[in-house]
Image (cartoon, rainbow over all chains, first blue to last red):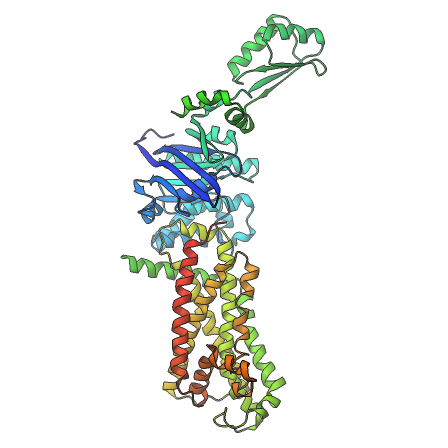
Length: 322
Length: 269
């Protein structure tokens, strides 16, 4: 998170896109401040990829005003292209070439000059832990390596705005963490990042602001904490050894649900350490023994249920969206 | 650098990419170069004796050295044009492979000359065409083909082969983009392989039945083959030269516009 936020670098107003009768984006608005991470969260088919494709000049919008890096998207697409880097959901590497050749290809297309291009390629190969495989054809790379090379290719020309479409989809947990570290490093150097994800956890880890896209509409925008407050799905599940302890605890804690057969109680909570500790202290004070405890943090399912399943939360969402 | 210089530099970069593909995965090149050589050997040695006897004096200028030698002289220009048709099969396949992969989507989001991706393919295929035609011609000469062309005729033949390959390659680039799969892209240029058969590549059109003869005389490959045959072996080709150039320019212009339009419209995934 960088401190030199100086106004929005992506501005989207009333963006619409349909394919035939199917409305993919139904008038969305948002702004992304320079040097921040903005995450578009949504399930498959919600319009995330379409948004990235429009913002990165791949396809045209039906309607709306979009400015990227100070340039109007429809009038100056080439100026936008010069300022951005894109890593799509499908690997955009040349599998017939080696890792190094792919990077040099990008440098050549950025008109960097032979020596600068080679130096930049070597630098990125090192940084993305690909130096050993630099001279092997990309077709022999693992999924994680291809994804890293893909991102490295995006970085060759030092773009100030980077679009990442589901950067960790299909990656194993370790590769996912590596990708997160890379993204954090980029933001620290002042780059603006627009990313899409299906995972609330990922948005939580990386994003300064999150927008939830559902059926082509932004149903909520805010920080991770603001969004989680909308979600009643966070709870703590307590397991007891006998029915007496269960009864006592039920009187003490006002649980949201109890299961007499499994001897469990569910208590609504945010899952932060302080409230967890105070709850355990109260149980301890009353002499109730807890056999087991699980913390359920809200996930994307909970967010969508809260934002789309209950009409009475509309006011809340709008308050956040302001 | 100005826009034009960038456009040249981007096209050169894309050509380097294509040449690298060719060197690293030579199987496609070997197939498109090998097929015409096989056809040449097949037609000269299997069919040549009989077909050469049926040529008569009119179609061949020298007509000496037996019927197989006469047929070699007749068929070589036709095989050379067929070589181009084989090369552009490879073009359509590699364009389709590119378009179905993610790399072209990346190119589209970069500030590079819009035509350079396709220009790279066209220039790469031109290099392939030169290699293929050189090889087929060398094999023909080994078999006894002795062109009667002087320096001016050679220049004309090279120029004709250049514009013909340019036109057919742009057509194949468009065909490679018009479908969504590599499989159908490899089938679409098939008619280009068949058209020389339905023209004057292997037998004179005079020997064909009415409607077929009409088609054979008015399709583009016949004037191109007749002109090349005239330039290389000294047969008369009349106004076929002008027709051949007109066909090539027309096919190139239409295909170029079609290909650029498809490239702009091509939806991603």
